[in-house]
Picture 1 (cartoon, rainbow, N blue to C red):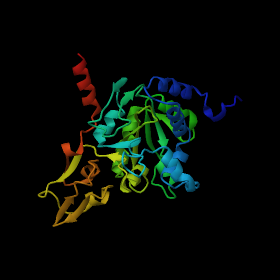
Picture 2: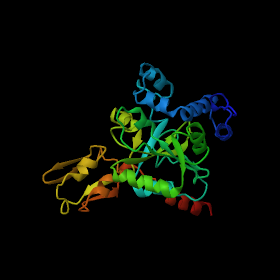
Picture 3: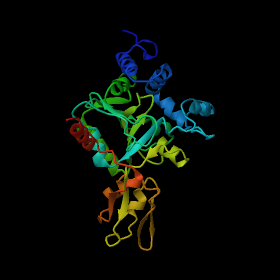
Picture 4: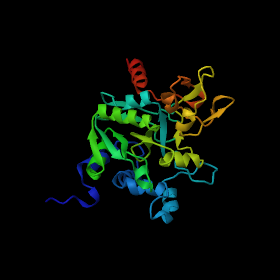
Length: 309
């Protein structure tokens, strides 16, 4: 039997990642090693980030190592380097059904962070369903586990080679099925970006407030997740005050008052889960420019095509 190289450093997917990294401007050796560690040991990495790992006594030094400190601030933040964009179901489905390689740069009007805001998809039909590192780290995780979607290369192959017991190849149809099933469970989809992942989109997280590390960190005051660009609105004439939307809201943005559901627009992230579960049709999503622009990949592709003709 052929032994795998030590740490997987010479696996084909690692070499592909390093080749791609050399093409990224200002992507240092530390960045390359950071990206390798993140994909090689995601369960350790995320477990440390959520402070659920047995070695949590060294969490704070490690978090400082991969965090940034705002100018004039005294608290290190993770969000500028690692963050998610909330995605309603239809928008998330578009990200797993892209039929061709695309390159969209500097999407600061959509991804409002200093770092990691590109969408560069190579082999976007290469999709991995990975057991969620956030859920794995929890003592009693929500199920199922294999709901993290790794999209495109070189990321999908790295995850497949390093974690064959926790990852499996799926096609776009199954990816859409996973997204639909997670919304039915009341869970939220996020498109994730990371500086060490070549500064680009690489995954769709589907998770819940009780397990998701990104939601936890955002609740603690580090804005690791940004709004979809939409807010939930309630039609008072249709609302019967059943409480379903309040029950399903992962961001605690909906409460019952004065006989109808009321939305805390500051807390609402526009995920659309409440809309999907409102049987009366009283809840709907509305674009709010104050919340940023939505990530609608097909519109971005069309706009890029028109401007380059």
